[in-house]
Image: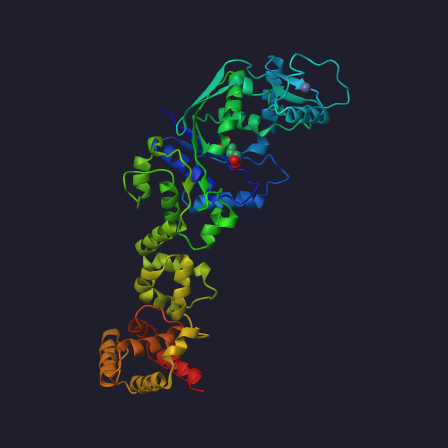
Length: 465
Ligand code: GLU
Ligand code: ZN
């Protein structure tokens, strides 16, 4: 089976995470079938399309390793071709000029509204209109079928049928001469040899009208797959209001591309009970039999769990590389090495790269402030104990080797008849400025004697005054 699919985003806004899923499903379907995945930028709405949005589409797809075949098609460069098809339809009697004015149509619409009838264009110019004002710039309308039905055997939605009497003679070319989306999308899909149109189910109603265009042109009709949209936890279409809705938001929040990709794949598609699915397996297994019909709800906690999983899977070197842009600082090699030494523990607890970068700050600098909870471990008793520990580290009675230090401090706690946690938390507050971190002995073994003494003393001074 030949499979040529396309992803056709409009750069009129930042790429929505739902569109990324559409891209992914198209891409997987192409790769699964050894087909082609083509990219088309639908930028005909020149007022709302921006170069920046187009740049971000490329950037997000590259980030997710969703590679496209050949050069992207820029829809606005094909306007002449779209017009040519419309003119050809006119010459074949399949389309016609409509001279109805917007005012005329608006008043007919209003009349329908009053009479509680659904509005559709009444076909006034369908058989010629010689009575028009010569100043009027006409639109071009398709001569849609008036009778019969149109059926889509959708790969996701199943068989869906509408009566052709419900479809009106849609506009192909606007009065300013620009082609409509309906026309452009059909001409481009035909010219690009698209065999399967896979897109969000908000386009399902357009499909019936697009099929009318295919028929009028005498072209093969591709197969369609309309995937349900993504909703927020409250059931409304996922939007900025729910936190993050654009793909770039998730990138900036510190989600790894493999986590996003795995999450979006599972959102609306399943393979048994598998949750963690590699790219190779996704390509091997992806098909439309297992794409669900019901809307998907975005579950942030699930995405975070997957992200935490993929963070643990990455090598320490790649995590360091990945977190660099998230850090506010330039790092020298010594600090980079320290972070690498601590990475095994850091990556155990991070759900996002932002959290990981945040937690790595203990290897970058001494705390600039102590969170409020630290004061609980900064009583005079704690400070006295810390003072003793500083002395012992200074005179090498306590080594900064992780295991040795752990044993020494345990013994020290025992001899003072105090729980280890009391001392460990005081040390943690001093080293990190907060009470959650990897093992303090590990941190000390990495940052070394001088830095440890410095941080402990700062803490003692801060609370000792
Ligand atoms: N450009 C359309 C959109 O962004 C998609 C058109 C299509 O997939 O047919 O919604
Ligand atoms: Zn008309």
